[in-house]
Every structure is written in structure tokens, then in C-alpha cells.
Image (cartoon, rainbow, N blue to C red):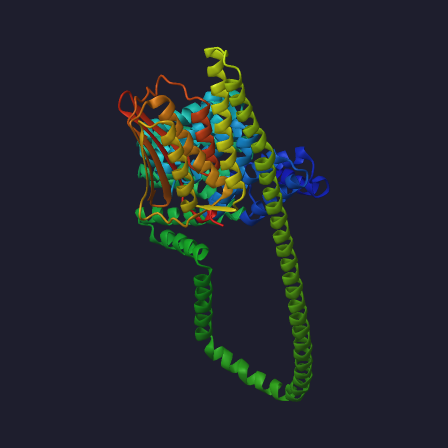
Length: 597
């Protein structure tokens, strides 16, 4: 462990001079968070600095790894909101870079951090990461995923499953000689054997873990193993056999200032001696436990002892007081003189302190004014940038409408002239020209949708309702036999605001689903229903068409594009279809303030 801390110190020094080197950034991001024997705040500062260094050189993979480590540290600290923020930032970069190994590891770590808050969600994310890692045979990630998945199974009291996954992780660690990870697997397995009351097996694996950590001088791990071995003997009610192991752990935890383990060791020793009816030792270790647990109580005990000493020596003290009075009388004049000096110095110190305080307040006010001026300049710059972007969007939309729209309209007119100008055009060619004209008309229609979105900074449900209603009217003209309906529940806030990109994604998903119902489903009825379930918006597009077999039909570009658009707004798409019973397309996405402006 000393060797590890020395290496960490070297890393700190190295990064201060060469912080923008990719290899240095990667080396810090690969540090084993659970094994860092430094304060949590220092760990957070380390990875924040590494993130800034990665941003300076636009090193996206280094940024994502730093976000991942920060999410893990904040999770251990119980700062779940900060953990979630870093989660979202990291996963977006990993998916953008198609770093599937890190995506797998990230989902698994996110699940593991939730084990005591929401076990079902923890299992969900752990299984998601495990599936990606197994599909791609990522052994480095799987060794820890299997081990942590076993911990979740142990918490869920599935002890046989826990052992199974501990063994799977151990096999990989042994294969790649993961000397740090192997003792963790053995300790985890030993804990399960203890819960199964197989105490001999539990001791065997705790000892294996201990021997490995002794080789690597992992002092904190060694101390934990000693305590765990003592716990096994306590579970067997072999109180005397447990004592030596607690005494081996205790000096290490005291030296390393591992307060939690020190406190636990004192408590266990007190309990053991209590069982052995050795009240003196039980009381002694309970007092030690209390001293570590409550330093204020320790101070009160010392004050009580001092009071008792004064009480016992009162007579002796009285004689000393008489002698001191004579000395005090002689020194009274000297004390007064010194008091005058002290009071004068104190007055001067107060005056200087007041002057310093006034200067500090003035400087603080000046800094606050400078900060406000800076914030105002930044706000004005942002407004100017937004205005420029809005002007550019309007210019582009005008160009699209005036140039491309006009050109597409010219193409339609030219095709119609060809059809009517040449009466001997064959049926096949005529149909081809009709298809091209229809496709061009559809392109103009979609171009108008795009221009509509570009001209809006924000889009509400009311805007979507109007636009979708217009699209449905257009769809009715294309398919007179199909009935359409569009409904918004009363509990949906029609003034809820989306960005133009989000609104366009929602509109395109609904448009694609309705088009599929028209083109492929042969439906008589198509419904679009918008509702809100807790903190989620839910949009269902339902038809009574011919349906399809989900296990046979491969999703095409349309379905894949719908999934991609759903992910871009933080949601998901679900398809439910049965032969001759129609199809339901369900879009769920969060109704959070992050979608508002």
C-alpha cells in the first residue's frame, strides 16, 4: 500500500507539469477508486482536474472516463444527483465513440452503486452491462461485473447464485492474474459460506485472501481479513479463538486511522469478553469503543478524573495556596503593569482588526461588483449569440423555402408537362413519372415541416397538436378508407415546452407510425393518444391492421430511426403487434424541467 501511495504521489507531480498528455489522463482514470487510501474530497478533486485536462486537449475518451469515475465517487458519498449528472454526460460520450466495453462497465457500476437504494433498478442496470460485456466477450469488464453481480445476488439472499457469479469472476481474474481483484473474490465467497453456516469453508477462503494480501502488503485488506476471520469464530461461538484475530487487526486499523474498523474491533472485543463473563475486559474495550465513537465523551471522562484528584488532594492544595498567596502579594504590582501592557496591546489589535475587516469588506464588495459585471457581459454575449443563431435559422429556412421549395415545385410541374405533352408515353413510364411526382410532393411536405421547426425556438403540445392534425388531414386524403382520431388527456399540460429539435423528433415519430399504418397495415382505424403517467409523457399510436410477427420481422430503417429519435429525447420506443390484431407503437419520454426552456 505504501508503494501504491508513492505511485499516486508521483502521478500528482507528473500531472502538474504534463497534465495534457493522453497517457497521463488515462493512467489517472484507471486508478482503482475503492483502493485509494486518501480523503474522498481529494479523490473528487483529482478526477475533476483530470476532466479539465482532457477538455483542454479535446480528448473525449478521457473526459468520459473522468465522468465515469466522478459518478462512482459521488455514488459512494451518497450524492446521487451529482452521480446521475456525471452518469448522463459520460454515457453520451461513450455511445458517441461506440466504446462498448466502457458502456458495459458503466452500466454495471451504475447498478452496483444503487444496490442499497433500489435493488430492482440495480439488477436491471447490472444485467444490461453484463449483456453487452458477454456479447462482446470483454473479459476485463466481466471479471468485476460477475463479482459485483454476485454481491447483488447475496443481498437478494440468492446465495447459490452469488457463489456462481463469484466463481465466474474469479476464473477470469486467475486467468489474467488480477492480483488486486482475486482476494476480493475470495473474501466475497467466504462471506457467503459463512451465511450458509459452512464455517470451515468460510475460514479457508478468508485465509486464502489474507495470504494474497500479505504478499502485496495490502495493510487495510489484511486488517479486514483478520476481523472477518474473528467473525467466523464468533458465529461458531468460539469466543476465545476469535480474540487473537481481533487483536491482529486492531494495531493496523489504529496505525492507518481506519476509524470504522477500529471502532468495530473494540466493539467485537467487548462483546466477546461479555460472553466470556470477563467484565473487566468487556468494560475496558467498551470504553475504548466509546472513546473512538465519541471524542466529546472522552473529554468528559478526563474532566471527571481531574475533579476526583482535586477532591482527594484538597488538604494538600490548601497548604500550597497559603504559600502562593504570599508570593502573589509580592508579584501583584508586576502583574498590574503587565496587565496594562496586555490591555494596550489588545486594544491595538482590535483597532488593527477593525481596519482589516473594513478593508476586507470593501474588497469583497468590489469583487462582487466585478463578478456581476462579468455575469452581465456573459449574459449579453449569450443573448447576442442567440439572436445571431435565430437570424441564421430564419435565413436558412427562407433559402430552403425560396430556392429548394421552388426547384421541387418546378420538378413537379415539369413531370406533369411531360405526362400531358407526350400522349404516347407508355404505362410503365407514366407510372414511374407519377411516383416521382408523388415523392417530390412528399418531399415538399416534409421540407415545410422542417422549416416550421426551424422557425420556432420552442414547441408546445398545442403546436404539435395543430401540426399533427394537419398531417392527419393530409393522410385522410391519401387513404379515404382509414379513419383517424387524435386525443390529448386532460391532465397533460398543453403549454409544456420542448426545444425545436425535441418537438420535431416527437412529430417525426408519430408521422412515421401513422405512415406505417397506412402503407403496410391496411388499417380501418388509426388513433393517436397522448397522456401522462407520473413523470413520463406517453404517446400511443394504435391501428387495427394486419399486424406482424415481432420474432420474424426484422426492424427496418423506419423503426430504427424511431428508436434513435426516442433516445435523443431521453425516451424509449415499444412495439406491440400481433397477426390480424393490429399494432401499438408506444413512446415514453420524461416530462422533466430539463425539457423546458
